[in-house]
Image (cartoon, rainbow over all chains, first blue to last red; front, top):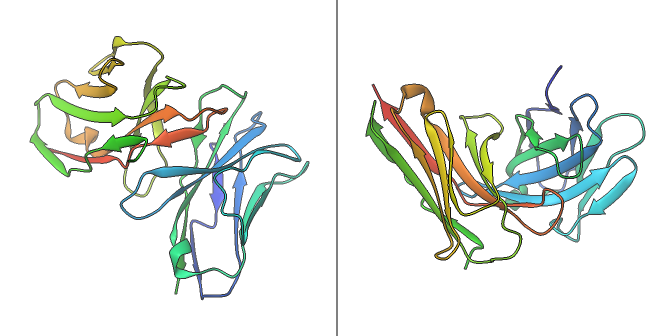
Length: 113
Length: 111
């Protein structure tokens, strides 16, 4: 059973470009979470999604950031008009139930030039 | 004040030593505590979790929670070089798996 798959593992963007990060949860998991890890900081919750629904986006910046988890395909975290402060590692996690253990992917590292 | 505070280290100890990693928290609501281990360039993996005060043991690892002082600890006995990693404490943040993490302590076990 493959783990949580994230791609790309590394992404470089120039200021003003768009970044799209993808996450395929573990098989059988319908709960997906995105966390951001800034340099020298702990992980910070961004958003919690179930299939086709955003359940909690209280940690998501109000502008430029969006997330989706369509009926078919991976979850997508989209960052529009990236700025240098968006440079971070973005981790996706999935769980089989709302209260189940979180299984993290290896992260996508975004660098904004 | 951050909701979960953790000394970032780095912490370096010789192989075989007992390691003590600590966190404090400020919000007493939603008291479900976890320790994650994160190897370099990898995702965090759950080591231990606990709901209650007191100790919970799993092999060489012991998690301790003191709710009266809002203090959580992880002890590693007979530390091994393979334990070298960043250790993150976390507590639930009032939503389904909406975890609040400390900033992590970087640990190195020297052979």
